Image (cartoon, rainbow, N blue to C red; front, side, top):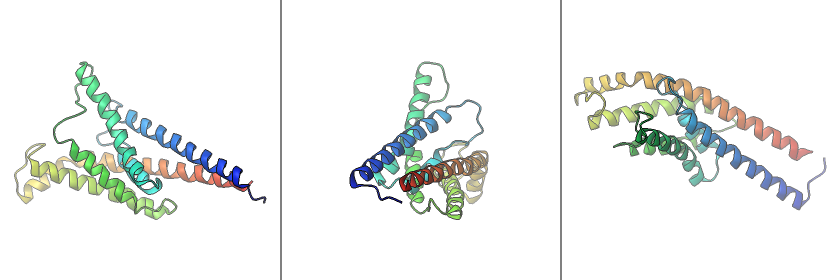
Length: 199
């Protein structure tokens, strides 16, 4: 196998990085548009998987945080535009929404612990992400008196968690599915580029 020259290797690295950025950009846009599909099951969206994947794969930490947040922001912006124009009845931006963005930032940090080449690590992360999001988001709703305004007792907390179960099931299934697509697609893409570099 011939070793590439410095110039050809530099061109290869630049091409690889630009293709990865395009891939991530398409992922952000697709995730944002998917979230807007009417009638999809509650909680069934790719954003948790995207946050985990971004934290695991994207080496630039600022960019890894930006990707899932940008995907959410784009879809929220479209929701809000539809609401303002009278087309939709769901607001994109609402009081307390910053909590969602904060939680997704935490999920991206959780993705740092996922080894993209280790299937068990991906499965464990795909389970931990929805569970932590479910507990944190519903705990915050309970403390803030949102949702059904359950009483500030242990029983009230259990009721609040029970209220969120349909969303949890959807997010759990979606995270496993989209994690398989994201990490599997990335593994195929990386293998393809390693093979191309070897020739």
